[in-house]
Image (cartoon, helix red, strand yellow):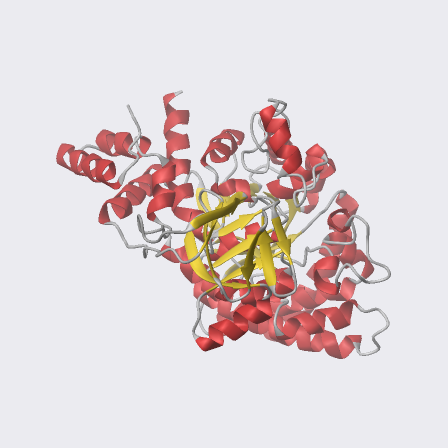
Length: 516
């Protein structure tokens, strides 16, 4: 059966299935829709022939949808333009957490560097902001950008297509996304097929992110990245804390704890009784303190981050554990039933998890004594290094759950920098058929998938019933989802705006699995 690839195809398919009235007809309809169509129908597009514009350049499409606005070269410029009521497109070499306030306000993002798993890509997908990265012909100057010799001044109009990777000069009119009854029906049928066999959760860091994810049909949060909470006023606080010469560390921690608790209360309240997995801080230090520091690391993605930072500055994870516990306690007092899990990142050895877990449990118990909290959160870990995957049977003995971080796992299995490899080197690998696909886009079937499958089996032998999920960006890619379902994971978690595609793709994978 050919796949439905247009809205008209979808409408005919749904109508025919409803007229038939059987469960089999619903299953056939779900199996017959191209996931790409769902992506197109849930993101804005350019109005056909909306303007006579020129193609400037192309890069890696990392967040679908179309956008137009005035070119801004910094987050500060975006903020200023937003105050004037102007729509913008952020154009820069690359983005960092310090840019995220502007990134949330802009219509689209274009960067000279980066790939599918770079900071700009991950954040843009999470917020549904169209983005193109790795535009190799892009040069950033003081007050203008150059695209392959074409100069565009700051404040002049520019457009981008986050689905094709194309960048245009001038404004192109953008359509608004609308709710489509046939699409809603299709996704409801997909959910019926999934049932409780495999969950679809969201990577969401704020109440706003979660509200968007729930509207798209998410069943909770599989990954809350707390480093994304250290922005705005909190960015200066975390920078002060990370400065070991700062004598006011204790006061800074108190301020961080209060703001973290406030953020968690909002997030947990919005989630209701749905699961929320909170990952403790896991970001390369250069993203917070900058790469120009005298003691900056040469390979920050492989440096002092995740559990390694916690071992050096254990007050940080202790503070986060207290703030989470206090937030849960506040909601319990409101007669709510939050379901919160705590995830420790970048573990490579059972003893690491054992030590950090003991610190976190100590803080949880002490705080719970004060607040009267009875049901304490589960504590698990993120499997994102080859050593952790190969040591799954041992690590599982200290973990209540596993979540595979496929972005970092792919990076470390291949020895590819997920920020730098994708444009020039990856293009050559694909042209020469060295690799069948970009492993940051479609999960590597030869090594990474078997590694996940073997680690999942080993963990369940060591600890029967342990829950296993995936929260890397591959959780929103249909081809990768097909491979992940075969490994036996309990859920996949992806960016909010990829939830509809994931709901469909997961159901389609289960249909194929049942037929085999």
